Image (cartoon, rainbow, N blue to C red; front, side, top):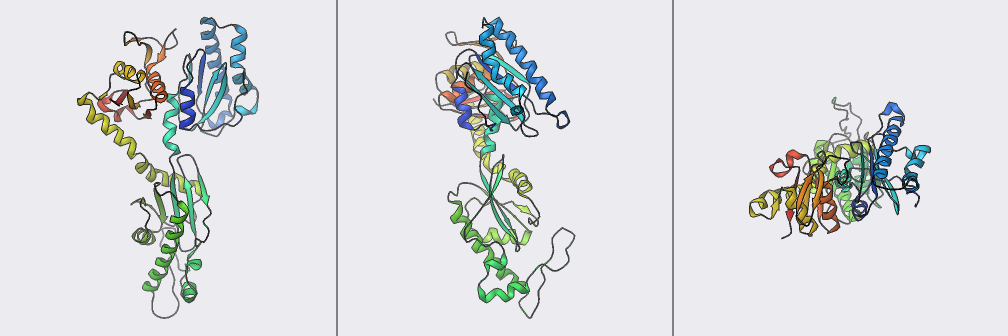
Length: 391
């Protein structure tokens, strides 16, 4: 049995596709929810121990020898014995075991405790993670500090952009240096947490301020566009209201989002910026998924889409499912006979029972289709599963 991969990673699409390729008995899936903060990992260890006991019983009932069971479950037992079981706060754990491989993943979402033994891995709990990998950018912009970040639903990193001004003072030409020095944030705040600009000298005032900020925005935008390269990722701007609207008016970024994070971003750490910006970027990033739902809804009456699980399984096995959407909270246990093209409902844990939605997802992935998870209320006809057919 190969040792379990050392790095505890969050699965991406290729990981899920690789898991879906496994199709032989015994394939074991173990899903462990996040630790309560106060348990110190004890509760998860108990969950995993109980799941392994249930798996042992099912394997014995299926005729697997004691030696083979011990070898199959050895990587999971090793996790219980050493520190590698731990993961980030709020993260669940997914373990996939087979005589030829063993893998484990962090799951940064709420998951239910589950143990599955069969010919296929249970991949559907990982599908809701996939949209979290979608990238966006965050520009935190003020006259005193300029920062550009690359982010996703899972993390954020600051980008070092050569030549991009780090503040208003760096953006202005030498002839404007005196104005820039006269324009600073020395005035008391207005109660919103920011400080108002303060001017010294004669004339100008508001016009000088806008001239300098316009120069800042133009230079920041030019360097940002060169640095970002691919411009198919949305940009969220965090700035005080006047500067936000000024930057929007000037910027040539094609996916600068119309809504931003309004307020002074100087005191926001990267994690706070990411979590706030993600709520805005997610609306844009999820548009393709919403369009898939609309396509399914409009195709139902043309018979090129279905919410009938039997029809979906038949089409998925034949490679005709282009898009599959499902609710992860409602597995449907049973068996599928491809010769009669019929479903037999079964109780979970009984011999031959598998989650038929997971089966549809596995077959769809193996044949190059897309899979998405949604709340059931968003799926056409309120069904637990729906599919758009290629033909």
